[in-house]
Length: 108
Image (tube, rainbow, N blue to C red; front, side):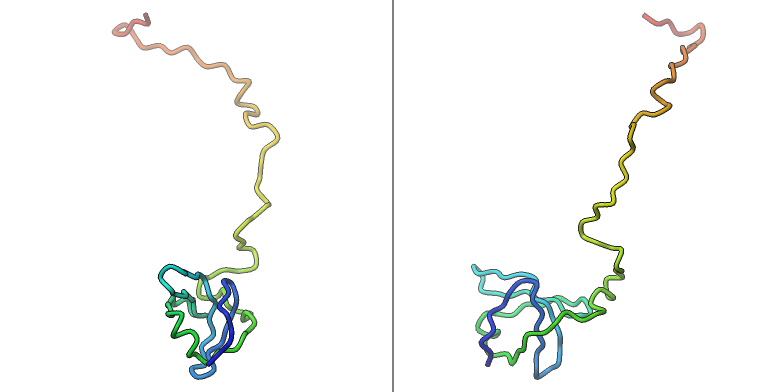
């Protein structure tokens, strides 16, 4: 049995199976704890089942992003957004050409 309280974004290791996982959500209404294994598989524990597991707190593994094909440049929030100084640039200086619709059309 464990005395660890589940925390979202915390990593745990099941001593019996050796599986390493991250808690991704807690649902107090349904009494469930959602987790994600290192290989990307998602699962769910009942709170009563959580207390019966033999768990230890763990550090996030170095390669935890590999199943998702993420690298160090992939970030949730990327502040390196390119914003031009002048949105219109040269195009704002162009004059539209008058349209010639031929003899069949008249502009009213």
